[in-house]
Image 1 (spheres, helix red, strand yellow):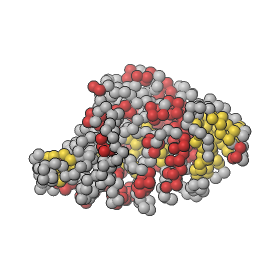
Image 2 (spheres, protein in one colour):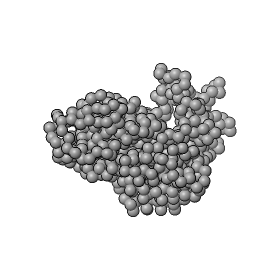
Image 3 (cartoon, protein in one colour):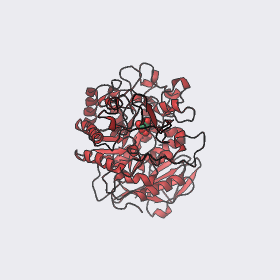
Image 4 (cartoon, helix red, strand yellow):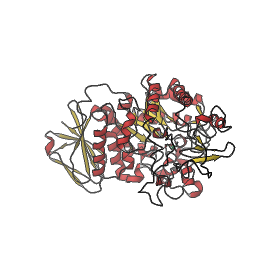
Length: 538
Ligand code: GLC
């Protein structure tokens, strides 16, 4: 049994107990009828988030940006893009959120700026400019080709030729997103000050964009070929990112960010890191001086079956350092929505899993009402990834469609034309309809959140996996004498789970179908297809 007796012996911080809710600001609520969501829109929906019961919001980038990558290309780190509002709107949002006990996390994008950022404009103005060394400029090979074979995540080579100064610059993503050189102390100073700017303004922490990308091989060695790559797969995967991500020295930078957070009280950072789970652990820092939470994306990547997921959960629990707090995620603005990936029925099981595994859950806006990926016709594509590498299903617009608030025009998201199409089924799937349906997935999320809040066993309790049959996953969460059993049917057949070996009486607390009464269970329990159960062990 892993992680025993922890729940009773220490205090837990808000980001350990709490639930994070990710808002993609362009798509949450448009308050000024330009078809794009904004900060006053978010503020007007704090009531809803409070009703839902989440603890913190993470808002994807809202800073000044030419929007080549929809805000992940920043041209001023310390101001708000007019499309989202003003600093005044931001302050009002934070004040209102805090008044309601909601924390606010911002997206910190340290790896790259916009090519329109004044730092880059200076840097590219001349080889002798003081900011030349803020970015990664390199000479061409003698034949004029790029310095090495490195590829950009969004297609093509990672090196962009600059005619005026006769050198290439490196960009891990779009050519409009030049990478900063984090080995340069001036860059470090300036970027750590960006954190302080927002921390001084009262934010509770950051989600840190592509934390594992911040340093690249000094010697610019070629990346090796990926033997598993085939034509038709993501072209970026043709090479292994051996020399461009996850360099050991990156931990020193992460620790510097952490040190900035430690200058303030009770702030946190969660790192976006797409790496195998063993490598993610390093991002906690060798003795906890790294990220508070390195995102754990396993539930996004794994095939949806009980055996693989149960094994992954156990492995993750076993790999966690003693000081490392776990976390779980079902989806985000870069990955297909959970309801599309696993289906509407299993999305409810996924919700129960997310909110009962040990660790901080991060929810993605709209998943709580069962929003699906929205197919985007070619002439409506916005995402630069889809534009650069079309037709491979890599585009991220489908999971970024506007939030469906009600059945009025444009789903109550905007009064004008939304920046991305709204799901056709919005008249059925929307917050208003789901709130008035006691059996909706939204009612399930709300109930799960309530129970999680009320039950220390679920929010911070110990975790122990139980053997279960085909399609089933079972585990017990425990704090003090309180034990809660979770049994999830990840398949669409009826299954039985044996309670006999638990040597206690069992009372049903909740079914994902929201249609069972709190009865005492004997010997075993039948799970319907796509059903999850919470059971009190008394
Ligand atoms: C992260 C973001 C993604 C963005 C990329 C480049 O992966 O989540 O949306 O495009 O970084 O900043």
